[in-house]
Length: 138
Image: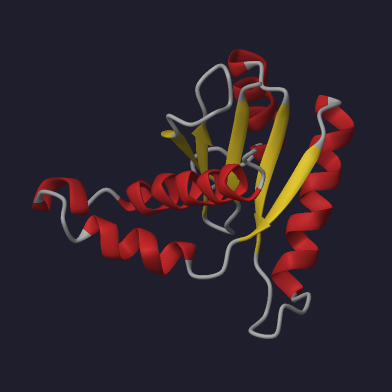
């Protein structure tokens, strides 16, 4: 059961996918830059159509006491649109510190790769997807 992970942001959206069985082999797929591609929903639906996942996992930005935030409400509203249009179930994972962890991982990359602004978003999407797999592993 293939899954797509989404790291939602106001500037860029990181996308990651699992292998066809959904057991692992998480890889960063792409980044949707909202300035270059303002029709975010259509682009994500195109990627979903290409990848044909069974479900979507979205990072949910919660507050320091696991409370809902303005950004988590924005993510839930976007997820609702995606769910209606894609007809796929959406699962949420607390994305606390994924951007920070992604930034730490980037420090070990070559200097040229560290300049890629979308790299952190792809890595964050991978971390979100991996967290979901870890929580739901049998």
